[in-house]
Length: 318
Image (cartoon, rainbow, N blue to C red; front, top):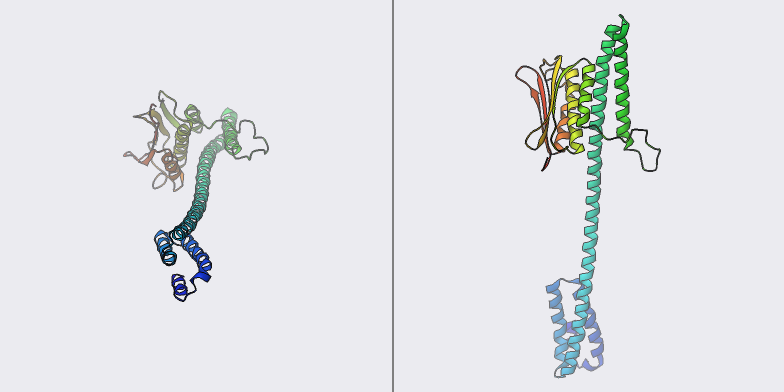
């Protein structure tokens, strides 16, 4: 464009084509200002401005007019380019936020599924194991009849009722809004430390001798921490029934240096090679405790038994 303008002036066509040259230069300046980066756009503005300045000399008024018009065009192009870049950046940011939101939602769904799976495992494994032990006791006493056999059958029934009630309570929160109303008690609070003694009694009814000690913190732990401690004790006692030949277990809950410590141990010996039966109980307990920032240790004791200890932080002021 610059060569064309200077060439037309050198050929004596300046006066007839000056307006067309200015319009063409405006188009070039706008295009360069809008499409190029800052430094190339400045260079393009200078290259286009130079021949028009040469042609307008020595008329200062015409020179000033050209500078103002070309400069204004270049400035408008830069403003529009900046706005366009802002729109593109906002679109990219919006798309990235959308992807992040979907990833967070997927992660939350996965974590919730794992939590529900752990709860279902705890409830079903505990209840079925206790019912199996109680049913075996009922079978041994059935031929004799009398109150012992009747009590064993009633214990199986009571365990089944408790399991169904807890399953309804867990599944009740999954009902969609506006759906059928949840059954009575389905939205009751999840079990906590107050229910640990009842849990211990349940296992005692199944034939397991348990020594139980509770030293609760001065300030009640959060419900989620209480639930985690309850589930750890429930799963550990279930493992004692399933995988240990020990007739006695020891359960303790205590506050220790800003943490809630739940411990279950038995004197052994284990029925399997490691006392866990190869299931997912220990893994589920460890994931549950880790989700509260705590840690869980599980392993054999020097006497051949098995010990599970969960340490759950209580937070400041607990």
